[in-house]
Image 1 (cartoon, one colour):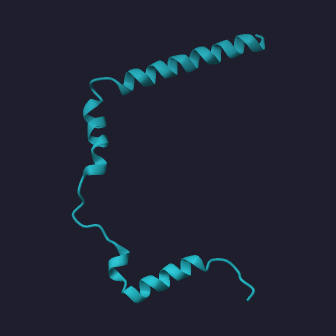
Image 2: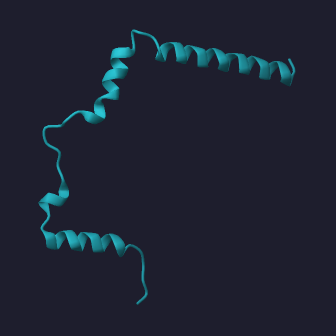
Image 3: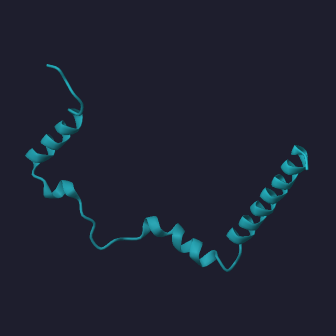
Length: 75
């Protein structure tokens, strides 16, 4: 078996895999699952923690400053 035959077999297998994934993705049986996944970004969670609301304004500015002061400085 030479290199050309091997590459041809691999190309054929990849084409079959592509067709299989495409048929799977567009099958009617999978549509409800994909529709649900498509709407996930729009779903409301009851309560989402937001760490900035728990911090006082003074702590927020300190936290922002600490993000900018990363790294070693020889001053």
